[in-house]
Length: 88
Image (cartoon, rainbow, N blue to C red; front, top):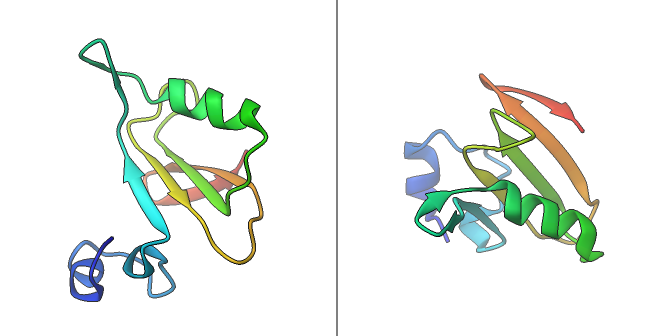
C-alpha cells in the first residue's frame, strides 16, 4: 500500500493502483543476494494472471519489479529504462 500523499511524493502516476493496495514494488533476495529474475521467470511460467509487471533497467536481472493487479488483468509485461517504457 502507498498512501495518495506518498504516491505524489515518490512521483507515482495519478492512475497508480498503489494507493488502492493493488500494486507492489518488489526486490527479491535469494541466499542474501538480490535476484529479481527468479520472481520474473516464475511468474511468467506460472500461468497466474496479473495486470502489469514492470521490470526496472534489465530483463535478465531487473533492479526492481512492479506488480499490479486490477480489473483488467492484461498480463502486460514492460521494461522501464530511464523513465521510458517498452512492452516485452
